[in-house]
Length: 181
Image (cartoon, rainbow, N blue to C red; front, side, top):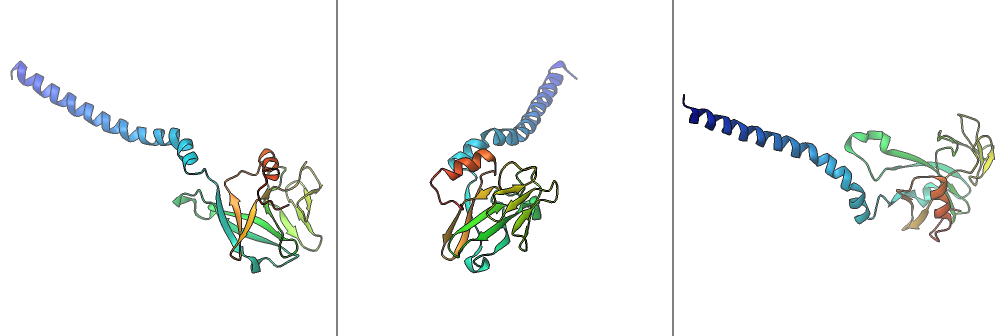
């Protein structure tokens, strides 16, 4: 073979190698670029916030507290039942509601409602909350986290997308929006 034949083969293999490396680089870059741009894209779409129906008003009788579940609006196909989120709904008088995150404000263990004692109790460290979500006893230093709600066409809807944190809760309470308090 001549030297010009080797150069042609070498340059062809070099071009094929560069092309394959470029394709692999582009494939690997897609998730990185999506990750970097995701905060901007969510801000343009209004963030993660959404109003989710959790049931008809008749599902929550006056004077009772009931468990409800809703589907996380930011969900992947593989999330399965882990995307179902529980919350406690208290119908105060038939018109006013309180919707509580089902997690203890101490370390996030799921609280349970005991109608006989009218208390939410945390099984992990003995935290107790009154029926209005305020702290009764135990290690939590604050009450249960409340979710904002609204009533629309006979359905109870809650606003999702806000993490139940002490700072987020304080902002929500003073925001002027419909609050469950």
